[in-house]
Image (cartoon, rainbow, N blue to C red; front, side, top):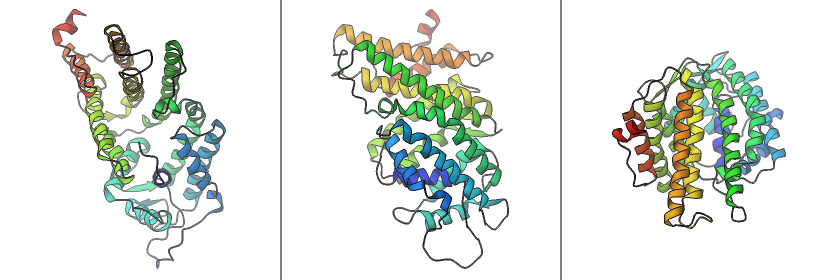
Length: 349
């Protein structure tokens, strides 16, 4: 992930993708100065705090005020909308407003990024893909308020999540405990966040989620290596959705979101397991016949645990041996693990 000066622009874009203020469509253009509200005076400090969160540098005491500021800002924008319509404004109005009044310096928001944000907005807030309403803004503010306590707890584990964890002085047992504690914290956060998504009767192609991540990375001047990594994870995401969650398609329906939450959390930590515990030079996991098996064994346990947890949340879901084998093999291929599961092997388990 990139954490450069554009982080604050990206974060602000997300918050304001559902909100605006002082926008008067059809009037003569005002000067190029940014529109200001006293209620958003905290926004600059908030963005800096959130930047530190994703660098694993933020104090726990910073997190709640930063998120509270975002929530308050959204409420202020909702109360001061002055678009062409009383209760909503269009995506064209929003992008124009952001590019003219918020993003004073740097790259303007491209249409490709705006379109992916809109798709995601519809999936989590409902409504139409061509407009934002006051009700949707208020709902977004409530979601931020709901996840704030879990975000504060998650901040304690961000070093592990963003791969800045120094475990060189920890024992193998201590590493496992901290690693698993971080997994629990992330699961609690995603469960709370995604529980709101299921309230909107909409559909969302998981490929669009990957495209959204890539568009943000491109906007943040990501390297081709970063984009290639995201494409690697696309195969895992699609395989898990098609084979283990809901119907046999890459489309997430509203009832799928709680299950997607668990799968997302488990998949991220599967990736982190590879980064932290399967490196040849990892302390206590040096390359040897015994520890090679140990590393693969831990990863296999993670995969099996994630699969069974996802299936356990779907009482009526029937998964074939072929689907489980395909899912395992996609994961193995993504991590360049020279192991292949066959259908006959699954039948023997």
